[in-house]
Length: 346
Image (cartoon, rainbow, N blue to C red; front, side, top):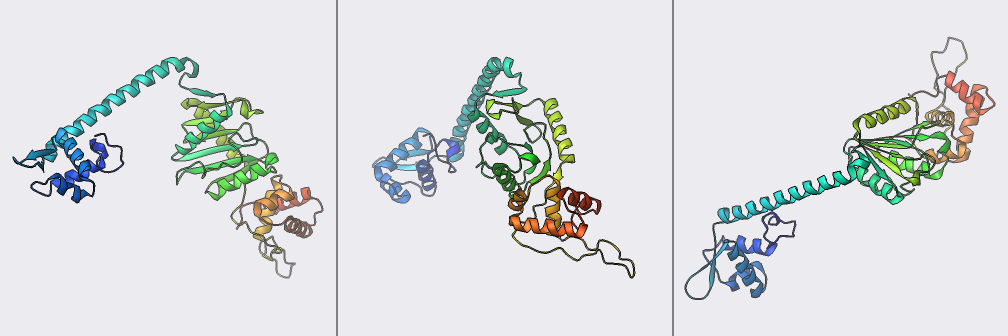
C-alpha cells in the first residue's frame, strides 16, 4: 500500500482509502465490510480490499466466528513498525544518492574541480540561470548589458524569485537605449530591485547569494557558453568587482513614472539676500530628467523610462537651459551639476 498522496497518511505508506478505513475502525468495536463501505463512501469490494491490506500490516483484525467482521489493531505499535520501515527505505535512498554523487564527482571532478561548471549550450545557460535564481534566498547582484541569453520576456518574477530577495542591477548606459534592456530593467525595478547605470561595464555577471556566480565564457558572444563559479575565493572577487561598479554607478530615480508636464518649480535654492533677486530651482520631475540626461540617456529613452512623452522631456530640458542660461545639453548638465541639481532629490 504505497501512498502516493500528499495527505496525512502518505508518510506511513498507507493510501488515503486505507487511512479512512482505519480512522473509522478505531471508532467502533467491530464492523463488517458493508458497514465500512457505507462509512467511507466506497463500494463494498473496495472496502474489502482495503481491509485485507490493513490486515497484512496488522492494522485490522478479523473477529467473530460467523460472518467476517473487522476491528482495528493497536495503531501505535503497527504504525510504528510501518514508519520504521519507511525510515529504513529513506536511509537506503539517501545512501544511494551519496553513491551516485560520488560517482558523479569521480567523473566530472577533473573537469570542474568543484569550482566551475561549464555550460556550453544556450538552453543550459537559461535553465541553470533559472535554477540559481529560484534558489536564491537573500541577494542577487547583476551587471547587465545585451545581448541577453535568457531572452527578453524573462524577469525575476517570471522565474520565481522568493519574496524578500534583494536585487541590485547595474545596466550599461550606452546599451540602455535598447528596448530589451529598458523593459528588463524596469520589470526588475517594479519587483523591488534597485537600479543604477554605468557608462561601461567590465563583464556580464550575476551573483546569487554570494555563493555562486554566472558569467559568459566570451563577453562578445554570450550564447557561446557560460561559467557557473562556485569557488568561494572567485565568487568573493566577483562580488568585490560588482560592489566597485555599483559604488561608481549612477542611481536611476524611477519612483515617479507618469505622464505630466509640470513646469519648473519656484522653490528657492538657498537663502535669498534681502532685496536681491529670487533664484529658483527645478521641480522633482526636472531633476529626474536632468539626472538621467547626465548619465548619457537620450530623450527618447528618458521618456520611456519615466513614461512621459518625448516632448515633455524636451520641454523640461529647454526650461532648465533657460533657467541656467545654457544652450547645449552638455552645458545644461555641467551647470546643473554645479548647482547641485543632480544630487539626491529633497
